[in-house]
Length: 158
View (cartoon, rainbow, N blue to C red):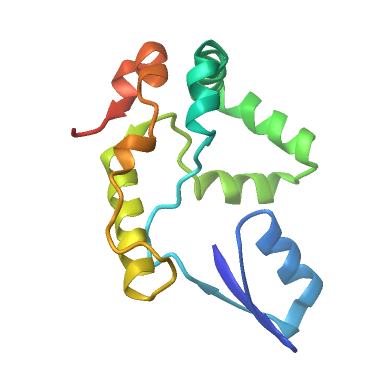
């Protein structure tokens, strides 16, 4: 992610491909600074607990499709890059750049829980929430679906 400053806009946090598009549009009127400090960013699929509980088979099929996509990407990296390039209209150089900046893995790791707890502590400390305690995020994570599809990907300590 990057912070970008321009004129009356104080800043924007964006990720690829948007950060590159903004830099191209603003040219020399933009300053890009890294904001992640080498911390990982996570992509997460989210749904309401009541919906997930009523649609577990749909969730499991979705997770299975992600596992299949991950497997395809691992076994066929050139073809996977070609699909992304064509679908998103990227050139070869840009595709290689963003590819090297990402780690594609379907997983549920303890580091995600720790990152959410850190974020919650920060929000509480800075009065950005009415909550006074860090929630138990395990109450909001559906582990069974990923365990059914790819058990080795679940690395959560209970």
